[in-house]
Image 1 (cartoon, helix red, strand yellow):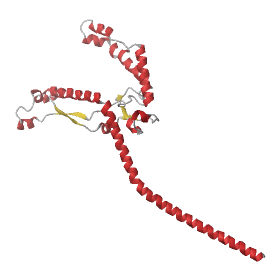
Image 2 (tube, helix red, strand yellow; image 1 turned 135 degrees about the vertical axis):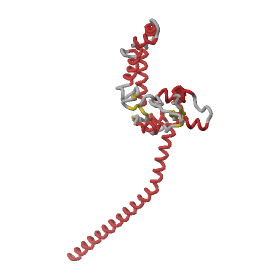
Image 3 (tube, rainbow, N blue to C red; image 1 turned 180 degrees about the horizontal axis):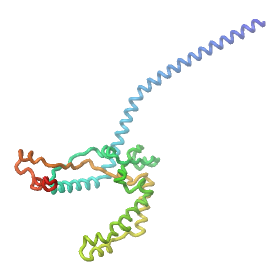
Image 4 (tube, one colour; image 1 turned 30 degrees about the horizontal axis):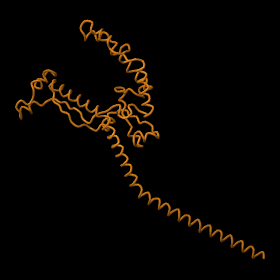
Length: 269
């Protein structure tokens, strides 16, 4: 019986080894098939992922355009009026120029080196902004040290930014604290009278303004909330010297007397 028992044990061990090898081989085949399936799935999913990324960027651009359409209309009109004034200035100087389309502001400001900030995302922002894309709320806030908006990080808080505006008006060295300036531009004692009549904000109004601006910044993570701190319209003005020979060749009275005398008046030529 001993040899029969030993033989049975040996057969059992061999059977276990064979079964283990068969299981390992099957698992290897399944792993290989799974890898192939994952690669095949990746090949199918990758174009979809790329398409979704492109769509996300398009949605981001549309959201920004939608926001700008409603929140920058007044700024757009003001910019166009400024350009009209610049055209009149060019004519008075004897220069030529025209207003035409510019590089898109979303491309122009980053190219010029403007600093941007993006508020952190919070759950309720979807209800306020209608999108989960935080990039839509990215805004330019300055071109340090030349341009710095009245908001953090250039000021510790919105209350400090509001106080800086008040100080620039009324504090020593401010606009309405320069007696000598107003004495120069007004006759007699009218400058002193004018300064006495300039209204000053009450403490309650200043405190209320600070509270409102602080609330907007803390609630939305940016200031202003729904329009950019810096807005550049999609138009600009080009100025140039006139080629008088060109106009003399093709036109009668193609330029004004001021334009004819520009080189002499401004450049001594």
